[in-house]
Amino acid sequence: MKLEIFYKKVVSKFIKKNNFSKDKLDSLIIKAIKKIVKKEDINIDLKRLLTTDEELFRIRKGNIRIIFSFNLNGDVIVSFVENIGYRGDIYK
Image (cartoon, rainbow, N blue to C red; front, top):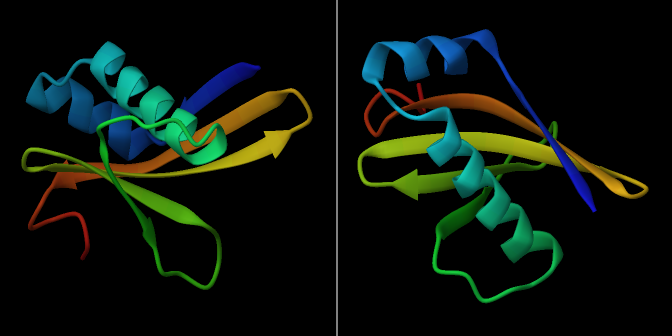
């Protein structure tokens, strides 16, 4: 399977401003998708968010929260990182 990860502009700004590695973010997204799609037993704090529009998931890494969604298109998984931020600011 091939994985493509896209970021919103807000996410790119957070990464630059807070010195958060894009590689670290990519590895967290990959682990989360493996846990969801392949049902692998991976140690990651992952939760499905209750929304009406689309299926969103939350990854917790310390005080940082990552909100993302993904679509399965045949043999390609397309992931969209919607938002990233600190615990108090992300859910507003």
